[in-house]
Image (cartoon, rainbow, N blue to C red; front, top):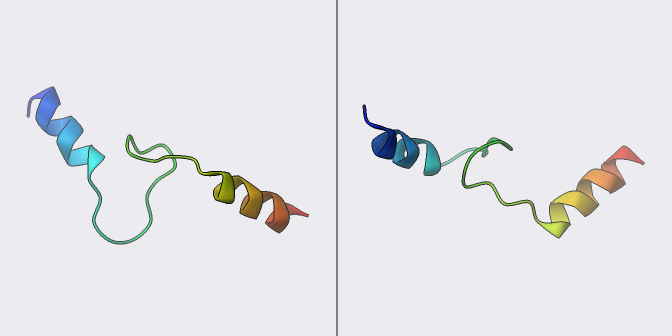
Length: 40
């Protein structure tokens, strides 16, 4: 498999949870606030 296909395969995710280290994962302020509230 060439690297372009591997990137495409790893980039898109259908259903379920997205891994935090996934290339398409974007940290949102709401994520950080929820994590902070859950830890307190």
